[in-house]
Amino acid sequence: MAQENVQPEARSAEQRVPRHVAIIMDGNGRWANARSLPRYMGHREGVKAVRRVVESCLDQGIETLTLFAFSSENWRRPKTEVGLLMDLFVHTLQKEVNRLDRNGVRMRFIGDREAFNEKLRSLMDAAEAQTAHNDKLTLVIAVNYGGRWDLAQAARRLAERVAQGELSAQDIDSEALGRELCIADLPEPDLFIRTGGEQRISNYLLWQLAYTELYFTDLLWPDFDKAAFDDALRSFHGRQRRFGRTGDQVEQSDSA
Image 1 (cartoon, rainbow, N blue to C red):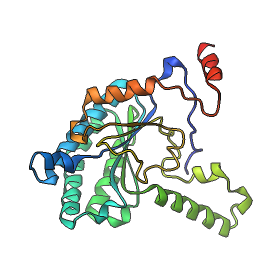
Image 2: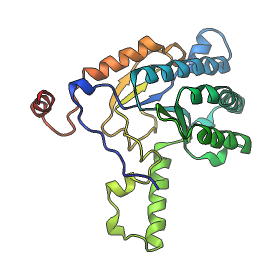
Image 3: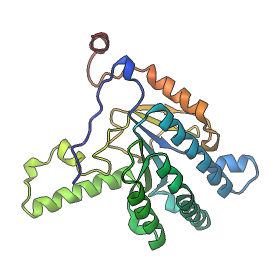
């Protein structure tokens, strides 16, 4: 059963490292096109950027990293590219799980898995089981995921519980809905990063990003390295997160 949805909290100046970072990894195809390479090569380079960011999160003591790997809208891409992406996903899982396990990373996948073949679903299940005991970093991979889908499946589960007499319609509020979402047991994202120059959230974690600090960069995802991640963290450090309070209240709380 999902734990109560963890709402973001104001943190003191000494606690400015985000607990949870969420990223849209945009620009793989454009990176490849700029080098006259097949788009697939951009996705392969993007895997290296994932590895760099995971290492940075471990170094920084960040608790959770959520990556948008494949959206529910990405099925609209050319079939050849989708097929190559699925092959890369399988290859990457087979290659990286042991490395992540050795480094204390717990893997978790969110999204509708039914669209994937049995081999890929089995690999995801096995990766989650193998790394379930780890506690240095939770790596959440969003695949065939959409924020609207997440909300719809949460509403469906609540409706089923009402139909079964487990709760009444009057019991349904924002907290009840939040508890049914995919990552209800994790801290909500403190920092959202999108590479590639686009400035939108593209149906990603719609509910969970309500109080998240947004950071956009023109860098294409394969070029996103430790220095770029540090730039995003510095931007986060310099922001005042008020959560409905006044700036004076936040300053008084930080100095207390």
